[in-house]
Amino acid sequence: MIALKLINKKLFVGILTIALVSCSDPWSERENNGDDNLNLSLSEAIANTTETSKFASLLVQSGYDKILSESKTYTVFAPTNQAMDQVDASVLDTPEEVTAFVQNHIALTAYSSVRDKASEKIKMLNNKYLLFNGTALIGDVTIASADKYAANGVFHIVSKALTPKQNIWQYVKGMASSSAMSQYLVSLTELNIYPADSIGKINPVPGIYSDSLTNSYLRNVYNLNNEKNSYTLFLMEDAGYNDEVTKLKPYLTKNSADRTDTYSRYFTTRDMVFPKAYLPNELPAVLTTRFGVEVPIDKTQIVGEPIVLSNGIVYIMKKVDVPLEKRLVTTKIEGEKNLSYFPSTGGNRATIFYRDKKDPSGVVFNDIYQYHRVTEGPNFFINYTASNMYSTTYKVYWRAINDSQANVISQRLVIGTAFKLDGTIDLTTSLMALPYTNVDLRFYDEVYIGEFTLPQAGDINRISLVAAASSTIGNNSLTLDYLKFVPVVK
Image (cartoon, rainbow, N blue to C red; front, side, top):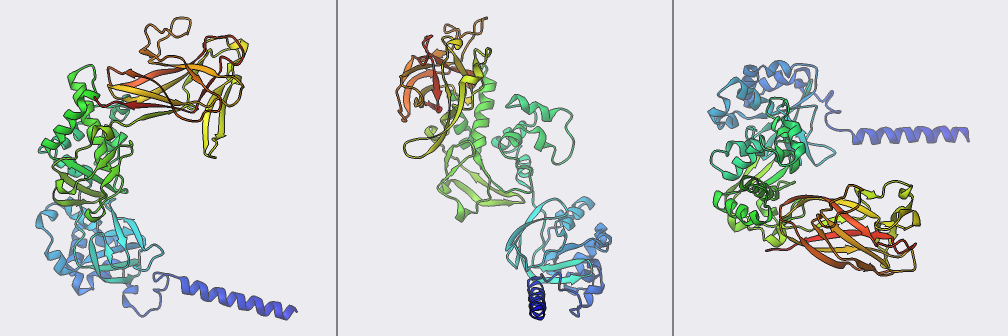
């Protein structure tokens, strides 16, 4: 029996060893394969390869021949001599440009064409990322000869130079003098959209990525200066862009014409970028922004070829016509995400319940429920806030579930709540007090409760759900699943 166990153990070890060897990668198996380059550094191996001698000369010129002779492990995508002959001389005008060019062909660590990941974004030494796709494509360049190993890494011979591309933000900055939309985006390095945007503008750190901290668009929409992620930007020509801005101005009225213009441009441009690089054949008919706006993509409005950049694609558009019904998105406020409540003393928090519930269809939802006790007194209220509201009329709906007591609840909503010195609500100076509405027992549908008009766009700092003016236990309760403010197109 003991001998049998030993035989089984040896058999298991043998099988495991075979499995480990069969799963190993080519970089691990490079030893003792008869390749003389294994005794050379990457720099030497590339220099000794006739078809990459011109790139080897550039390594010497930039000093990267020494770096590729160090003990660290690298991957080099070495262009053929024919590919180097096709490189525009202006790309290599200065030592800085030569260095950036060379860096865009080198990655730290070894990347074989045989990898666990069929498609992988790899970071080059100039901090840009290239997609190693399959076994024969790096970025948009074909690998002519793969997996040539040296003592400190691997190099692949490519049929075209990997000339560094600008990222989307660098492209936008370069277009600022000829594009109104680009000019506005760049201006947000100085202008603030939200109060918090000023933080990044205090003692900014200089450098190519400084705009990532200081520009309000990069902070609040997408960081188009980020090399790691991919984006699609629709950059409108001036006429189409200005038409969209003008269309939004009645809904973004501020206390001055300049501020109205600034915010109308911001809300126009924020819906022109998406978090993926869409090739022309991948563009859907509609894309939805992170702000919930459905943007129709009319391919007939694309001007010229897409501009492929290091972190995505830019489409120049004659116009992107977004219907106002899609642009003016509904604001939804969850009942359980309240800002505060009043009265806030005397243990009233104990009467507020944040509930996990199921409706009759089995759908889970969260809400807030406040059960009235005599100590609370009449007119208990719970406060909310809403951001980025348009200057228009809103139709207001709520879903409020009254399922914990036997009587109907009456409650109301006050918009733009103003307070008296004693902390109670001043209905005469609040923006709008909607009428009391009954919350029937176990009614799960959405209910229309009224409308209000917001004269200036911006935040509503106080929205109060107000209980009935009653001291009778059970009549002064509050409940709310959510509020919906649906903007009306003028």
